[in-house]
Length: 299
Ligand SMILES: [Cu+2]
Image (tube, rainbow, N blue to C red; front, side):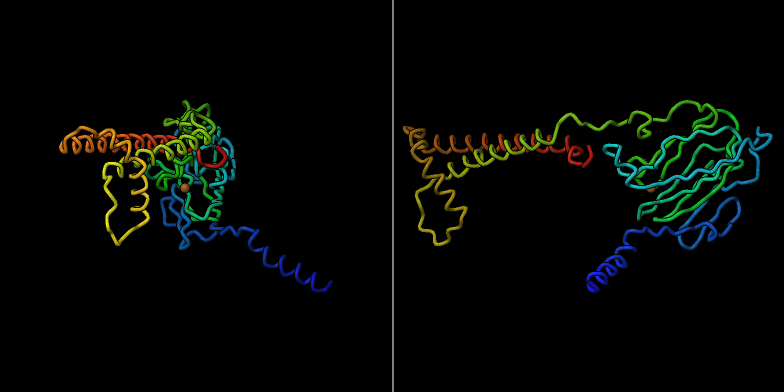
């Protein structure tokens, strides 16, 4: 019983660190480099931080809001074909809102919460930007401009936006919707889900069956009486066997032909065989390529 208990305690002790994800908290570690640019040595970064300067057209801060946004692979699972996502794809705030974003990166790679289109006199390059290598938390504050406008929020790490890490933030009523926001607007480049996995597998199996039949024609053309060859590989044996089987058929076909006619016929058959093989293979490649997304889980 004591053994059992201690074993249980050991399992618990060893599993606890695995179960609990340690998030590195960058708030309080950041150094202010001026112009709203904060950084730390652990790779946390805030750009466009602005907690006090009112954008032109705002008489006062309309309201103060705090949001927590998660970023990670697991949030993309509900969007077929996507790899990364935020846990929220659409945000809406009143003009002149003071917004604090707590950004939590759940992945073990780098992610960003990058907002574009802000007034450049207040936000360098028109951006407000949180960035951190996960798993980690980082926070930043900005004051949203007045007016109805839709802002793009994305992760700018190569291919992360294209793979789904994209959202829109509407100030006021916004000014329309952005394309390819997962779950919100249609993808600009839509994935092809017409074929199902069983169809693809059946096609692959059929093609695989057809290929050896075509290949078999090649040994037929080099059909020769068995040679006194000391080196007999498996391929040689198979080739000879096929040749022997096809010999009567070829003998009939070549009956009455001159030697040159036989050679021409053999080359013709070879060419047809290779042509068919190439056609089949390209068909197979096209089929597999156009349906490769189907093999992803959850689709
Ligand atoms: Cu990312």
